[in-house]
Amino acid sequence: MTAPTPFGDVGPHGLPYCYRHPLRETGVRCVRCDRPICPDCMRPGSVGFMCPDDVKAGRIVTRTSVGAPVSRATQPYVTFALIGMNVAVYLITAVQSPRGFTENQAARLFANWVLQPYAAAHGNGGGQELYRLITSGFLHLGPTHLVLNMLALYFLGPPLERLLGWWRFTAVYGLALLGGSAAVYVFDTRYVAVAGASGAIYGLFAAALIMARRLGADMRSLAIVIVANFAFTFAISGVSKLGHVGGFVVGAIVAIALSGIALPGKPAPGRIPVAIQASALGGVLVVLLVAITLRTAAL
Image (cartoon, rainbow, N blue to C red):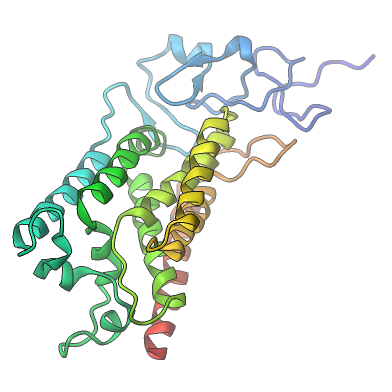
């Protein structure tokens, strides 16, 4: 008979042992201290589960599995700001549009900000307008398009922002937005016109999936929502398939760069140092910018 494996080692099923119960393997970690915890030690928190020690020491400044500080007073200000910006831009285009509130794409601002690859590469006689790859992510085609995207952001944003921290969450959203636009810019036809925050939203879907796997949370409901959204993407004409796929892929890559990835039958990786996280994010940005530069030269 062998002695129990101490905390930190991996059990026979490839999972670490609970730090309080050294005979129990587990795939779940405390969102504050990142220690493995079994079902008896799980204490529900605002995001994921916490260990009993961190629940007792609730006022102690601790960090999530990616290094973001945990505080009960933390508010998802970036999420609310993004929703406000999207709504504000829609209202401006609705007011400008001669066709009324529901056909805002006739607005001058919409025409200047929508992503059309050829216009982005050459502009309207005034040079390149590559800013369209970002500004198009704040435009929406009618109120239904806006409401659906903002509802997704409202439900996905706050838990992810609290888990990742404001700057990591901003990086996921921004890089996924750029990734979706870059996919359209690089691979779609030169005269297609694309608008919407969907690329960034799909990036959040991917990040939520990666983080749920990282924390050992139940992913079934989230997976069903993601599959349903992709089914809608490929079933409905007029939806930017490249934008959604590009945002999802980049969002997944960014989430893995921030948290690592928990493979089946393997323990969740340890916390990644901030310097490595920042370097990985910079690398993703460089790859996207290189792809955009090469496509601009080709257009």
